[in-house]
Length: 342
Image 1 (cartoon, rainbow, N blue to C red):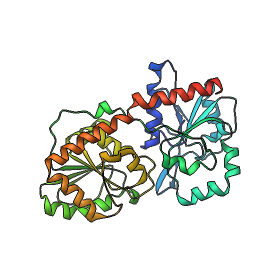
Image 2 (cartoon, rainbow, N blue to C red):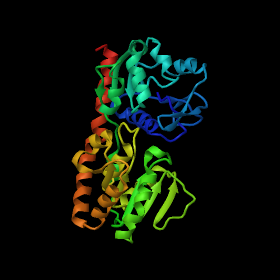
Image 3 (cartoon, helix red, strand yellow):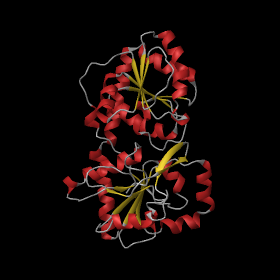
Image 4 (tube, helix red, strand yellow):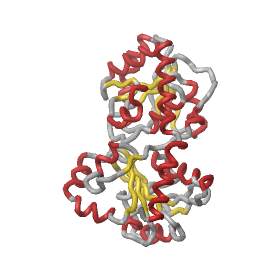
């Protein structure tokens, strides 16, 4: 169950859809529930969503009071319900009230300081809201830290990725960089663009593909590609040599970082705690917002083929930790524990 519209792009929606699609070979019949007017085959759709500002981004959620009834109806017949972002209005609230179906929850977000403070100040209320969860996980310690005041025993189950889809024998452009992100300040595109003149001054052949954002400005060496589908995204990543994640905050995991790693790019990323946990020593980190440090990391790779190759190999090895073959069994164990009452 996703609180965010299934017909809109988003990391949570992608994880919900992937989990739902991968359970059948394990003997589990699953269907996806969420707002939206379209979704994966078999999805039980809850109708249109309203987009609201949230955590430096925009969240397409359902706010109609009738959503509680529709959501409860959509899970009828289930043995276990997996609610993602249980505290996000209003889809998951139908299950938090308690409906007789064992319910587990997964927390994804790195909430703002205001939300974190609210969780601490009103922890008795929060604990009452989640008391009917029979299992709970977070995708990272960053996401878990926000809700530990109300759920102290959260399990960490990271986001998953089909890393095999990102393997390719295609020839890479040794001077090509890639970026993925919506055109929001927290995604850090402006940081990368500010560093771009310094990068090109050292390596004039450098080029950059920007996925997920469109700008009217024409910048030499940069292609703004906007939103692309999954196969095209993977094609771009597997032909680039460096993936840059210059995000400024609000990240609890870093699925795009993981995609760049799995695709065999050397990865340069800002030193967000969530990114550092995912990439560890396989990623080259720089102080967030520091354009000069970003330019130095990138040009260092562009001018040193051996370092570039070593970093790419390390990134691929690290990405295997997050493959669905590792992640999905942890969710299945949580479902079976919920069903058995343990």
